[in-house]
Image (cartoon, rainbow, N blue to C red; front, side, top):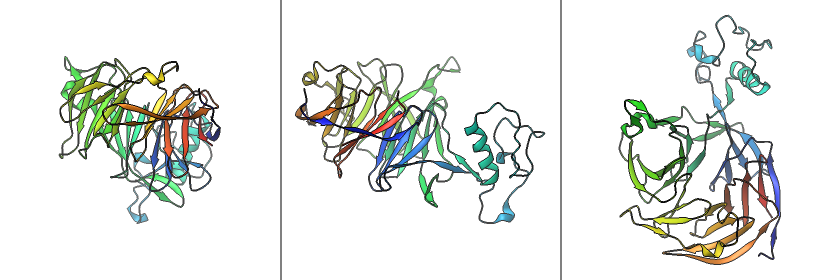
Length: 342
């Protein structure tokens, strides 16, 4: 279909199952979510990848006299009192059966008062450019965190904040947590602090209201897509674009009207929608099979042009568009890497 070929060059590799990319335009960073790590792709420094770290707050204090040497939080879970290494620079380790990465993390935790930030079963994330905050979707949990730099390394700024789905009655059934509550995709709306999100399974969309001191989660609307629906806020039309690999809808948050979007120009592509992203001007970029289509949207989707065909077949991608360089960054879940289009 496309006469122009977009060459994809690997800029990050050997990062396990990258599932989500988010762009911090002000700092020219790309946040990359893997199956248990959070990384930062520094576009100012030849796409250098830096793993996000966290401080051992019990040890990392300005006044060394404030340290509590008996605090259990200095050690990772799984070490008994008998197994603990008293000298932080002693290399011996308890026999836990952990991999080298976990052992290295444990040593850094003791010696340098930091380790790489770890997430449990995350699915996706959203970067709020207004609050400079990442929202990471874990199993049954929304994790809010900010990133700061220290000695050129990214660190989680203070303790992260979590909202647990099972703290809300609508996720409780017969006095027990409902099974399989996995937040899948989240998007902001025109109201700051008011979000919509979907779950891995089910047609129900939910609202997450953070405009008051106490968070509120409520059912919002049911949609035709039965599972794994992705949500994107389109500011120019003030509507939420909802899609899976085969169909797309637009939703008005104000009156909850839901309209089907005609994407017949993608007929013949398999799948019709691999992923999509929206730039600051409101243009929509759809990766369809291997072709990238540029579109506009108000009340309907209009094809502007096919930008070209990427020279890779990518599975389960996430994509962002860098307007200043006119390049796409695309994650490849199966091949454990991120590409830059050229």
